[in-house]
Every structure is written in C-alpha cells, then in structure tokens.
Length: 508
Image (cartoon, rainbow, N blue to C red; front, side, top):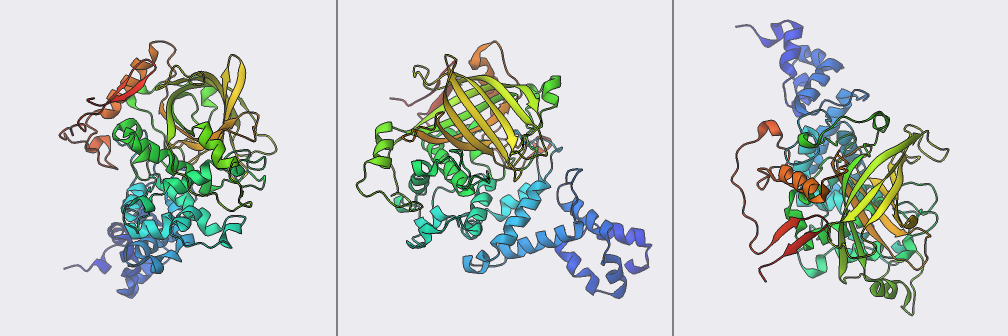
C-alpha cells in the first residue's frame, strides 16, 4: 500500500486542500514531510479557503493563510468559550474578522430565494456563530444604550466623548448583523428588558442633531465619521415598530429586518429576475445602484410628545447625559420611492475620492396615509462616499416645488449593499425645535415604473417575494429550493397593497 507521503506533491496538496481549516494547524505536526508541505504554502491555504468560504472579489488582496487562522480563532473564541466574561475582551479581534468576512463575501453566486442578495458561505458561518445568546451579549450588545439598560454605566460614563471605540465596534457589528435585538439577550423578556425605549431616548433627542453631525448619524466633530451607536438606535426603533405592526411577517420586510447578515456587504444587491432590466448609459456610471424602486419607513412622535420630551422639563440634562427613556406611541409611515440617476460628478474635496457623487430625482408615495399633506412628494438627493469610505445618502422631499424635509443616512454594508440605508429625517432648514426622527429604505426593484400604478408594481414584487417563502430557510439559494408546505397567515390579519394604501385589518 502506498503511503500518502509517497504520493507526488501535487496530489498530496490536492488532498490536503479538502481538510477542515482547523486541521491545518495539526497536519504539520504529523511528520516532517507534512510540515514542509503546509508551511508557507500559499496555494494550499488558498485551496482550503475557497473550499470552505466565499471566493472573494477580484480586487481583494486577501492573505489566505492569515484569513484561515483568523476564522479558526473566531470559531474558538465564539463557540468554545462558555461565558461572556471569557469572550468580551476579544471584541476588537471579532470586529475585524467579521468585517473581513463580509468584505470578502460572495457577490456572484445564486440569489437567496425571496431576497435581493446572493447566497454566501461567509454569511452563513456568521449567522451560525451569532445565533448564540452569549455571542450576542459579548459582541453585539456592548454599546452605550445596552450598557445603560443593564445599569452598567455610572454618571461619569455619560461624559465619555468621543464615544468609546468598543461601544462603536459593538454597535457596528449589530448593524451588520442586521436584526435589531429588541431585548437584552442575557435577560428575561420583560418590559424592563425592552431596548426600544432606550433607543428612542437617543433617536428623538434633538441634542443629537447638530451642525457638526449634519443632523444625521455622524460623529459630533465635523469629520463625517459614522456614529454607529446612532445607526444602531435607529435600527432598533424602526425594527420595533415594524414588528409591533406585524409587518415583518411579510417577505418584503422580513427578509430585510429578520434575517441575520442579509446582504450586509458591498455590492450584494441582486435584483429579482422578473424585475431585472438593462441599465441606461448614465446608470452604468453609477456604482451605488441608485435607479429603481425603494421601500421606505419613516417613524415619528406626535409633535406634542416630541416637544414635551425635548423642551418642557424643568431641569434639562447637561450635554452628553442622556434624556430619560421614552415609551410613547409612535407613528410609522410606509413609502415607495421611485428614483432615477440624473447626473454623475467627480467627488468634492470633502468627499471620499474613490467613487463619484451621484445625483438623483424621483417621487415618493405613501402606502398608508395618502390624505396627509406630507404623504406624497417629489424627491431629489445625492449619494457619495464619506472621507472614511462609508456611503452617505442625502434626500430632500419637495412639495409644490419647495423643499420641506431632508434626510441624512448611511448605507449599512457599503456600496450597493442589499441591506439598505438607515438615517435621520428632519426639517430642511434645521429647525432647532424639530421635528426629527428615524428613517430607513431598501431597494426592492431596478424598475422605475412610469405607468401602471403602484398596485401592479408592488403586487408583482410581493408575488415574487412570497413564492414558497413562508418557510424560508436563511442562506438557501434558488438552486437548493424544495417544495415546502405553505404556512398559514395568522388568523385575523391580512395585508393588501393597493394603489396608494398599505392596509391592515382584523376580523373586527
């Protein structure tokens, strides 16, 4: 019988290319021959990586050996250590490794069914790792609002500015995870463990809206760096409201708000086959994928509650001391945006220089409140890179030719990500008395329908998204689709998308 070590080197390398990544640390210890086969063998590490993880983008300069070592260490930290205390000091390493896995996630694989992003082995691995409550507590729930909810901060901590790096990294990881954790994962699900009141105390605090932050989710230092704790709070508020209205049961919302790591990496947007079309020449110059139809959510407090929260208290807290938690009723508006690229220009001196600035125009139409004077408007805006490389969206809502509302947002996952955009809306003149609040929008189609009405457009999207999707399995691609039994809707609740309304009703 021929020993493995007696085979030609190319055959040995081919065989070793199929070992599990953790085993590469043990194989060199078997014998001197294996030691020399593995040590410094870039092609072997590349083969092992590609057999287990996504093929990275062509422009990636991935160090195959270091990448495998990092992923193995990530699994050891997250899956073998059995307490939050044993894990939490690894946050910087976990943050860097998760970002690397997402930056190198697949963009050209089969689309995951019922979604607008491709399947990804990297995302599936991360989904598995962060399904564990301990990992959520150790890495996703370490921002200030979670520490505040745990009563783990003191009055001295309130004055920490700029925000602590570990809190920012945790909030960013939570945003990349993409599913708002609405209760403390290490506590019982009670009213006291709800996170939305703490998130609302940040989102609806007008002191967060300053000239230095551009009234958006940016640091209060005029650098345009993203404040991920603000983005996280926005995600929690909107996610809580969507879940409260039971809208996350429908694919067009569920796949963006209930599925971990759903397209939170660059260039992950993948149009539905029935909605794909050939771009025009101007769109070919747009790296952000602006043109199309986007579904938008806007949340806001009744202005009486908003004003009382910000201005009527006798003792106003000092700067950087949070306002009390707030848990009052919010309104949620669902809007369709149809936008088209109008021009593409080189970046300005204050922009990131790697990509151009793209300007767009279009219309927005409310799906649930057509009689409100602010429900329908024309739209214009721009997309650009910040100096740190994040994607910044600016929109203006225009009524009778006059700008009324503005929003500043960032795209979670980077350029042309399927996850979409989170940010703040406010008065276009930066009214110091508000109102202001959170908004989010994500792309549902490449089409900008000029005729046929919204019912046909949205019903077509919904029909496509809902086909065999009630028992949707995260990470399952179209090639892996199996015939699943349809899950019945919850009794007494239906949803109908009409020309301009999104209506929910019960048996009553």
